[in-house]
Amino acid sequence: MKKSSWLCLLLLPVVFLAFGLKKVLQPTMTYQDVIISGKIQDKKTVYAAVDLLQKNLKAASEKDLPNYLVTLVTSARQETEPEIQAFFSEQTLEHRLISVQVKSISQTKVTITAQQETLNLEKSNSEKNYPDHQTEANHTLIIEDGQWKIAETIMSATYFFN
Image (cartoon, rainbow, N blue to C red; front, side, top):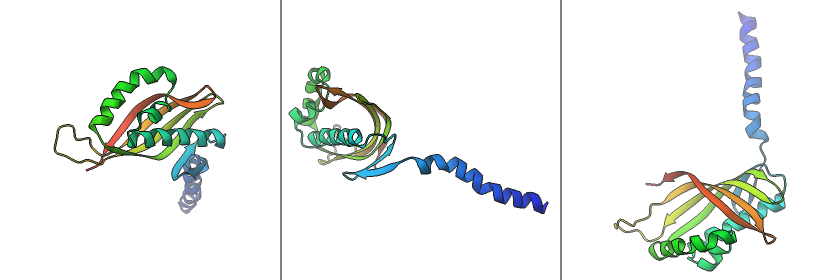
């Protein structure tokens, strides 16, 4: 009985290590106050992706339509412009990139899951009151004319603040 107890005690750390090793070995770093994890094989590309997302969110916060649109692939701009312009006229929001997890990376394409925070700077009791929240956004970035651009964004989870 004592032998099996000791054996269990000795094997327990090995089991914990085996299950936790993947998390421990996953590279994590910080760039511009953004926590980066995942497949960080090419730091230059990862930094460019974070810079692009930061530029996109800054333009959205500042209601800067031209700088917002320039972060998108050319094919998405015409369709996006009227929607974003209307949204900018209705809401004053502050957007912040919290973290990114690099899902895949190549010379021409990056897929990222980002945690983004959005705060409404004009609280009101109207129906159009936009709630503060944190969103999980799945971005696909591609190279277009030698620069990284956002090709697609799919929101997969939203957590509302009280």
